[in-house]
Image (cartoon, rainbow, N blue to C red; front, top):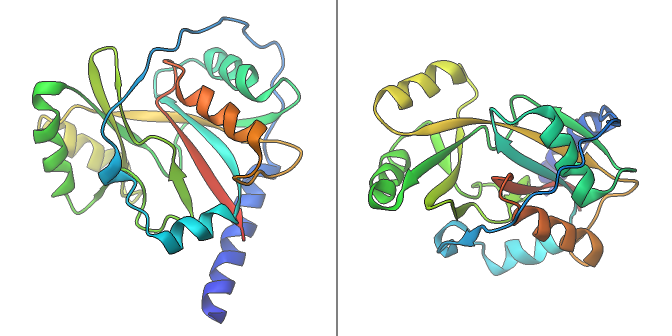
Length: 216
């Protein structure tokens, strides 16, 4: 128990340092975006135990919005402001810590690509093995007729591993993100924040939305 508490404290210190470095973005683009994402079967990617679910309900978190790696900063800034308010702070990450890539495939080939990634020891798909670090609101969804799946490639020489996977014919793509810092961290009883997260998750410029956990 003592080791676990020390580990969580270290995680909190690390993430607090990240969030404290968030910058306020001005001159935001005011473009509005349609929302037509459709939910795919995600039960196998959200298989948390009852104990894990109860623990996560008590933890504080901040949102991180995941975009395609080619998304412009102006679109990211406009999206962050649209859902979390112009008075929020956020930091754009060119290399997100947790969801650094994603699979995008047509429905006919999706399950085959997914199986290949599941068999790759350097790739994690869907929600993490350690859910008290972060969770993904919807790790698998349909957008514009294709299916996307959140993935994490080992950060040890990520470019080399990314090239290895794409060279094998699996259509994965890089991501970038915006981690949001509000005046306080939210919990699952914060209806305003959870509503903002759900609405952001349905925006078709957004791939995924994460809850980054800070402390118990």
